Amino acid sequence: DAKTTQPNSMESNEEEPVHLPCNHSTISGTDYIHWYRQLPSQGPEYVIHGLTSNVNNRMASLAIAEDRKSSTLILHRATLRDAAVYYCILRDSGSGNTPLVFGKGTRLSVIA
Amino acid sequence: ETGVTQTPRHLVMGMTNKKSLKCEQHLGHNAMYWYKQSAKKPLELMFVYSLEERVENNSVPSRFSPECPNSSHLFLHLHTLQPEDSALYLCASSQGVQNTGELFFGEGSRLTVL
Image (cartoon, rainbow over all chains, first blue to last red; front, side):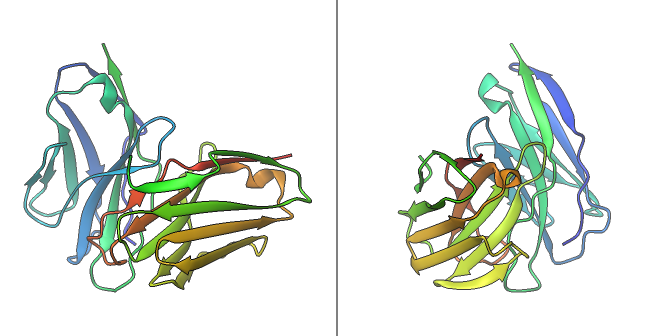
């Protein structure tokens, strides 16, 4: 799987937008970009995924660079409940079995 | 509540014990996974089952033995573990193992090996 690079940690104030960056310069044309997050004392949970176009759902937005070498997860208004480790993961659509391989992620702290 | 239930939530065992971790999913999925999360390390994929057949085994020592009797249940049998095996063991399920299949995780079983 192609590798992703994320900052180790970020901090945000409550009620403000948060932009979590992810670099994936070796991404291939068949790689989907997935984001998961892991809240304290819980298993990871799915946030969003995309291929080329920007995506929105009830949890977040995903902005994908035109060359696909980077992407940004956007939380529009951070709450204390959003404090978690956020993982950016590439999954190849070219082969059938593509299990999720996690990196170290970004630990997001939210300040009240 | 993710629809994936793991038991026990906490387990303490000696190196000579035999124990099992259980995972049950109520989502109608046909793929199940075991991940290991050690302190200060990324989640490591251990095993993948698709349609009750093991399709991936990531060089896991034989003291960890998975079992998938049906598509709703997954076990991890533990035997003669080492203290470095202490970790959070996470189970997940998905509909298929293809790239867009969202994984649903349980809350994990925290294992301590004395």
